[in-house]
Amino acid sequence: MEEIRVGVNLELSGMLAQYGRACQQGIELAVEEQNSKGGIHGKKIVLRQADNRSQNYDSAVCAQRLVDIEGCIALIGPSTSGGVKSELLRDLGVPVIVPSATSDTLLPERMQQNPMFRICYTDTAQGKAMAEYSYTLGYRRIAVFTDGGSDYSRGTSQVFCNHFEWLGGTILTQEFYTSGDTDFLAQLSKLKTQQPDAIYLPGFYAEAGMVIRQARELGMDCAFLSGDSFDSGALEELAGSKENLSNIYFTNHYAPGDESLENFARKFEKRYGYYPGSYSALGYDAANLLFWAIETAGDQPQDIIQALETMGSFSGITGSFSFDENHNAIKKVQLNGIEEGVRFAVKTEGES
Image: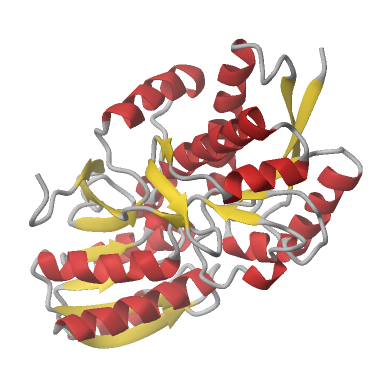
């Protein structure tokens, strides 16, 4: 049986492996389902996977190897913005499906050599949405805690602050930390003196979980707000208890309880033994979008690109979306909440 080789360039080890492995599992499930139906036009989908070790330079090397040596006709990943930026610096000549990298600066000028199609929203979209959701929830005095070394954290914080103040809210102060830090007591003590209604913490789970635990130990019961980086099962372990994970809201790519998502979740849980988060769902959508393009136009890279560029709308389990002129998904930013470790969709004013 002939085969179609698809490259998967993800963070399967290193600091961000929780995101990469979750995305990988969603992709694998989509491939299993497609192949069980006979593949595409009688050809089997074969994954060629590379571990970029959560390192940006390795992301570029992995991408080049997947195309030049493994013969992949398209790439999915990486799951983080730094990895995608590095990957796009290479001249690959194949479509790149970006499942979850949200940075606004993913080099659209590189589109000719590496047509990128991002199926998630951008940091600007989620920063603005979180500001609006925060205001709707009644928060008026917010402190911001930013990872100063992260494009994701800095960019989302800036958009959030600007839009929240434009809405009429007050940003009390902004403190900074660095990826890899484990002691946040000095910054949290300063934030506590401001008596904020909420703290906006757009950071990855490795530090965010510890920040929440130390804040609760200091007696801070204010709300924590964040972005899609909070959608990780590791957050609870690092936060210390389910009780610590209460009064938390974050923007996300899907709404728990949606019928199509729950159908996917049941299949995923049967296959992997746990309820999937957004990175798995986005990986699943990324793979199925690529399969649609191949089925529509064939398995040559330029034909796949043409199909994606002329696509009207695609219905995935993370919602329906189309692409703008820079190949960024146009889709709704959802609001999720966590109470005693339980995640749920938040209905805000004007929603049924």
